Length: 164
Ligand SMILES: [Fe+2]
Image (tube, rainbow, N blue to C red; front, side, top):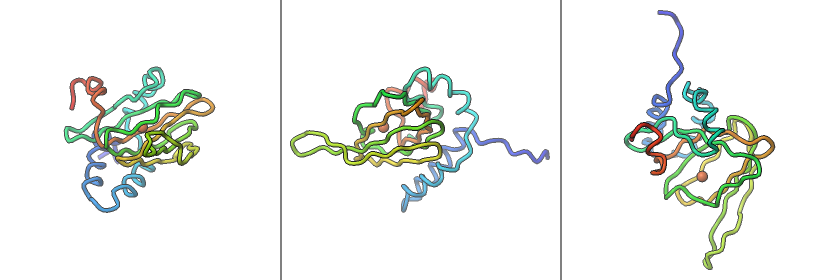
């Protein structure tokens, strides 16, 4: 024995997340606490440059049952659209930089209005549930986030060599 513990892989982390998510009660707070302190898998450093270059969601691992882990770079001054994640939850942790996280609601007449704005920085974790409309934007030099999604978006299926 060397006494050295290998860093968990992204797949290891997803198995941990799946066990927490399957625990039912207080899923949101338990997953948020877990993501806030989890050691970063080696795939994060390996994917960092590509995530920043592409400025889109870049998956680093996904489970067949759906959970996916990825990186997302939010450039400064380029807000996302107001969106949800197709009825799925997600939780993000800021790894580098600063950003804005806004929540929005849709009025009966179909118009959108911003209901909260939060400035986030390294270590901050944000949860969104299946119904939460939100918009994000990088501040200053931009923000890099680790993102755990209930399900990998279909447009990312090709990013993991055909999985899931
Ligand atoms: Fe989002």
